[in-house]
Amino acid sequence: MAQAAAVAKPPAPPRRRRTSATPRRLPYLLIAPAALLMLGFIAYPVISVFYYSLQEYNPTKPWRNGFTGLDNFVHAFTDDPLFWDTLVFSAKWVVVEVGLQLLFGLALALIVNQTFAGRALGRALVFSPWAVSGVLTSAIWVLLYNSQTGITRYLADVGVGSYGTSWLSDTSTVFPAAIVADLWRGVPFFAILILADLQSVSKDLYEAAEVDGAGRIKQFLHITLPHLKDAIVLSTLMRAVWEFNNVDLLYTLTGGGPAGVTTTLPLYIANTSVDAHNFGYASALTTVAFVILLFCSMVYLRLSKFGGEDK
Image 1 (cartoon, rainbow, N blue to C red):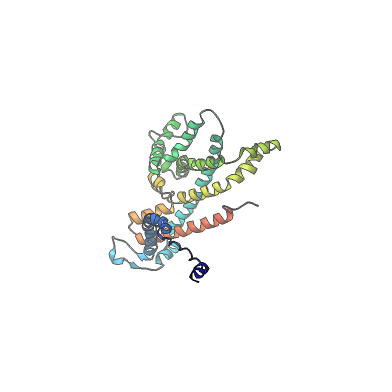
Image 2 (image 1 turned 90 degrees about the vertical axis):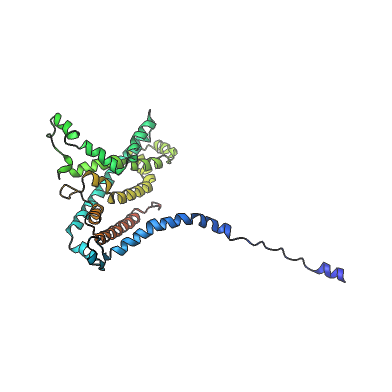
């Protein structure tokens, strides 16, 4: 009886091993320090700007500091003509710079993507200006535009223009002069990104197009450009944001002059906060610039169908 009962008794189920939660949490624990640093260096300044945009905050006039609500924003949109002037110039600066940088960057990428003798050296020369800082770039071009030792003197020697001409102090020439200086540094950015995407295009597509009788122009329009669409959209968006926030080059090159004609909105914000010590109003202008960039970026990505398939 005892043996039969022992045989009939079902075996005990195997014990389940308790899985520790530590291995699953380990990746989050490893990235926690970096996440906290990003939170401290990014989230806190952004929140502080939003907070001070609702305040009247000027360290040189502490008796006037306090909560003002939306007064800073109302003043910007109704009583500050410099806000609208700098905003219009910022839009003009971004459109011209990004458009020309994309055009020349695409051309350079197509050139250095070809096989020719000394291609490695050519690529290095094309990409080298991108490694130069904005302040150093502006210092180089200040020397080039110097009326005594720069380009204008040598042009005057051959009969073009007159001696003592300074392109950076003339309201009719300062904008194209600043455009050229920033193009020298910005074009390699587009060339690098577009070249990296060009190298992923299958050569079989071009060979098949040649068999079908498609020329270089048709290959560029129907193979190269569609493949580069996402790279162009992303690079133009990134560069537009950077050019909108461009302060170092224009500040060193022109200082916003002459007569304030090259003052962008970020440069106006810097002057308002650093020179005038009006941090509350500068924070409000920064908030407006942030909203403008966010709205334009969303609309641009929506209209360009970034990441989507073309029908």
